[in-house]
Length: 284
Image 1 (tube, helix red, strand yellow):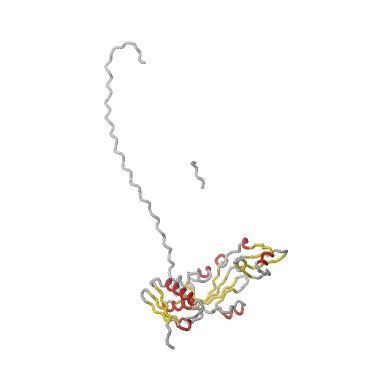
Image 2: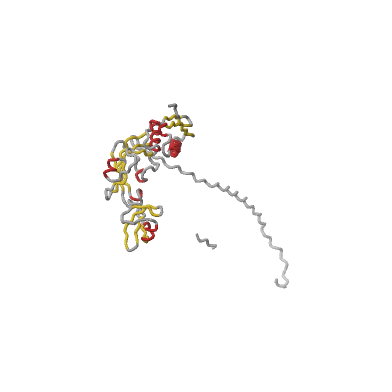
């Protein structure tokens, strides 16, 4: 910002009586009006976000829902995400160890693609719905600055074998090799689906309303592949107690799962202050 400080005649004359001048009345000035007190600055009131009215019989922001979904690029029909195991196998994107089936989503919490999350409100339960998402709200627009030319020898020194079409990690960034020639490699750091319009086919199979069912859903999210009904839960006024089934005492990453579950419960049940886990060992 630029600032600009910017002599009377001596001839004798008959003496005349002095002319009487009218006496002027003294001027009385009106007292100055008192200055009005300065008004205190009006503090701007913080505007609260306008809450959207609930839609009866449909999905609303903050709802716990179970949802089946399959995402694909509109232009090519390429499927990149699905909760259906058969579709995953058919499209060649099946991953061993992945859990398939309806996925838990808390609407508005960013658990799915941003553009999809923003368009779930109003979706009817048990209806197959196609949701279109523009590129900017899916995987972003393509950025020419993310396409770089790297000398072949540099990549080989990093133990990277550049083959056209290969998707790999370079210096901690995911990249696609676009071309190789004359000792130079064209590397594209854009997401493979950047610049593409996305379509999700979704079906909300359940809108979860009961507290116990919500906790079970959160348990299932953190303890993948474990029957949530095996976890005993007791809700108090300020504390929730969750009993861990003995068959997973020594499960992999159980402490991480417990902490994640505790943070979820405290977030979505704000009246609670503590989450307690019990591990009971019974005499065999």
